[in-house]
Length: 88
Image 1 (cartoon, rainbow, N blue to C red):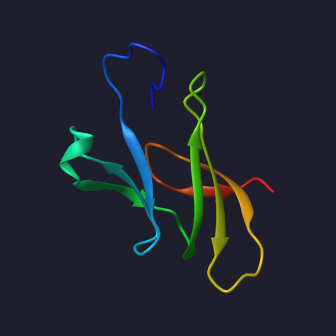
Image 2 (cartoon, helix red, strand yellow; image 1 turned 60 degrees about the vertical axis):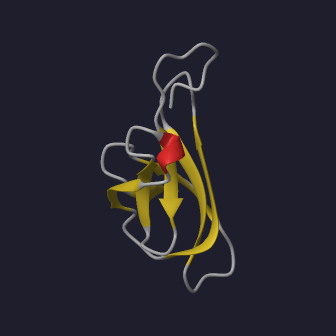
């Protein structure tokens, strides 16, 4: 988050498809390569995931292909809990 020019602090979020969780990459230092789990997405996903955060609102959106499904869905994801909800 805070992906704007001259930001003094940023947090790099990601999706761990092997554990079906939202994570923070770096645990304070993104280059450290460590991750910290934010929380469960609430369902199983395949490696076909995409995540973006609106810099104006801080709202996270993702596209997931859920395990066992052919297509993908558009989701909103809580940065506080990691829980994902289907938008469409």
